[in-house]
Length: 265
Image (tube, rainbow, N blue to C red):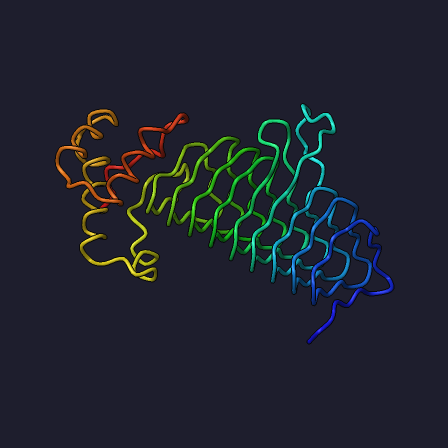
């Protein structure tokens, strides 16, 4: 059985809780009030700051910073956390700030990939199987649901919500909520169809995909405003998980959803 290995060049606070079979590289800093799960790998120069809670089998690459102090000017030094699930990879120079009094925590779920130079700001909630491309930047209190993919250099405005199975084009500026299953891009961003490739990869049936596509045709190409489209969606399509997820997301949106284009198909 492998043992935990901590480089003699690392700085590890004696109160840090470190699991079994963890590898800590040279020049790593682990502060007090931190928890590192089993079999994690912390590469050279990364910093695990107070409030970090890292699950098992995570890999933190060189010079990433976990649980950094929030850049929110309202932050007054309150004790908060940054929580990372299991089997998540944080690549080089990525930064994950801890929460503020608003939510108390920043969360990244399990099986996520946060690529190099990305930033996850205070109080963001990222669920599972999410990919953030290189240099993608999330402002505070952004919420991202399962299996969403944000390509490189995407900028996401504070409080934006991004739903399940979404794919966002690289370089996009996201200021509105993105409903489930959507493919969005162009400049300024618009709805470009549904994420068919992603849905097929994740086992969606043709019937599910056809239904999702029809719902979005009604929303974006039916000549209706959003309120009218919601009534039509509820009456026209049978109740099912996919329909209800779309309907509830749009109904609950406070920022409004990404706009459509007459040329979507």
